[in-house]
Amino acid sequence: MVWKESNQELVDLIRSRKAEEALDVGQRLVDFVDRKFPKDAPEKATTYNNVGMALLLNSDFSLAEECFREALAMRIRIFGEEHREVAVVYMNLAQMYKVRAQQILSKFHEKTTA
Image 1: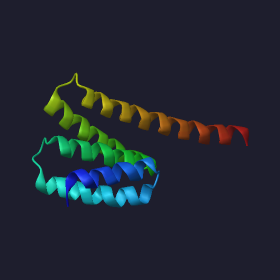
Image 2: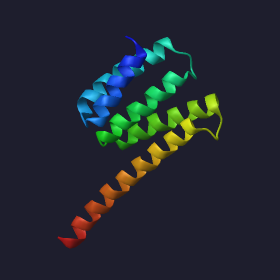
Image 3: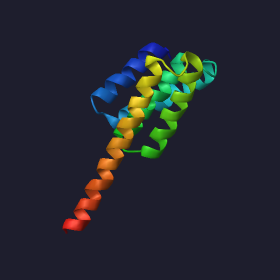
């Protein structure tokens, strides 16, 4: 497996909103980076961030948050707190919380108008 090509495939699947396929590719990619890259490799942090996006697409908020938090910790150790790559993960976490909040509010609204 070549990381760059597999990561691009994952990104393309996420952009195409193909959640199940993205999760399959993402899981293989996580397994690969966990075996082949050191603890704080940028490729590993990127993989965890992108898998978080695939999980968000699949509405698996708990696992998405775990992946984003792992990616965030790695990127802070690699780049420092004030770096663009760190900000990207913060934005993805914020997006996840926004989607989750909208989902909860939608269900609440359905219950109160029924």
